[in-house]
Amino acid sequence: MSPLLRRTPRKNPEDHLVTLVGKPDCHLCETAEQTIAEVCAELGTPWEKKDITQDQELHRKYWEQIPVILIDGEQHDFWRVDPARLRKALTR
Picture 1 (cartoon, rainbow, N blue to C red):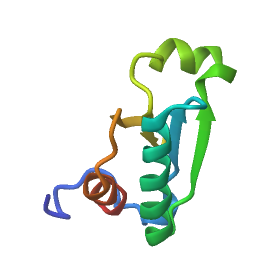
Picture 2: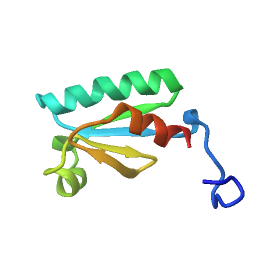
Picture 3: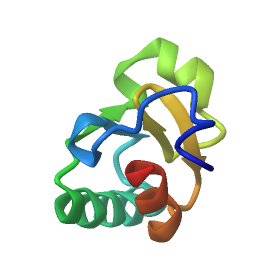
């Protein structure tokens, strides 16, 4: 998108927050965590992990989709993390 048409200013990767919503003993969650950790380390983006078994609201919203990846609180992806897609979302 042309910078002239962009409605919101571009954020730096370190200004975002990536949240992984998952649960213990979930192989997809473990794979997603590894991918998120690598991409976020490369870009300097902070990230956190939340456990749906410890949060009723997250469980209600996402129990069928875990792992769920949020960027700045908005759902970005679920089940599998595409590193190129995550990198692109954090750098635009």
